[in-house]
Amino acid sequence: MKSIAEVGIVALAIFALTAQAQKPKGTAGRMGGDAAMLVEIENSWVDAVIKKDIPTLEKYYSDDVTDVGPDGSLSTKQKDLDDIRNGVFAIESGNATDLQPRIYGNAAVVTGVGEIKGTYEGQDISGRYRFTDTFIKQNGQWRVVASQATKIMEQQ
Image 1 (cartoon, rainbow, N blue to C red):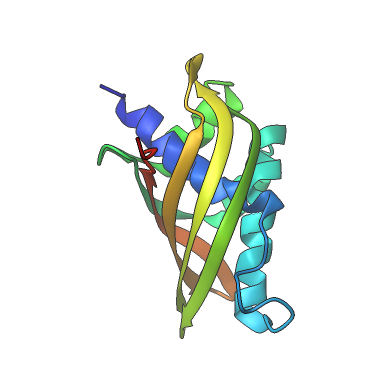
Image 2: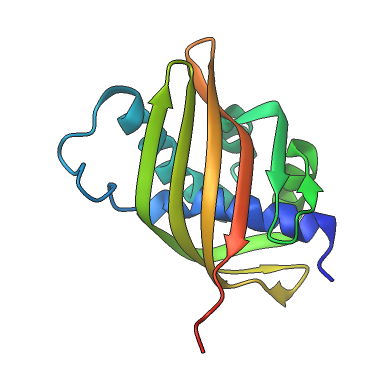
């Protein structure tokens, strides 16, 4: 069974995947305002994880963020950042498709499918995941308050 930290880190990784993300299907060229800002945030996330850029990651997290991993385990902001800082969690590469930002006033949801190549505690966690990230706009800044990832099982 995967540890709570590993599962939370996978959820974080999925959030981070969008560095190489495409604009959502059907919205290319039409995205503006808050939707574009959310995609930009998602786009810069994986670079920050790869570079262990903790200050950038800290500004995107709500202090009380909840990461829900593929097995339902929870992780916190501090645990995720510590694991990145200490190299416990590392993303080598990632991409995301089907990004769908939806704005509801000062709340937003971004869904997509991500594929990562990475490790947690030296174990391969590479794969495809469907994810949902929930944001709240606080003092003019979008911050993730919840992130959830589910591993996509390969069809046999």
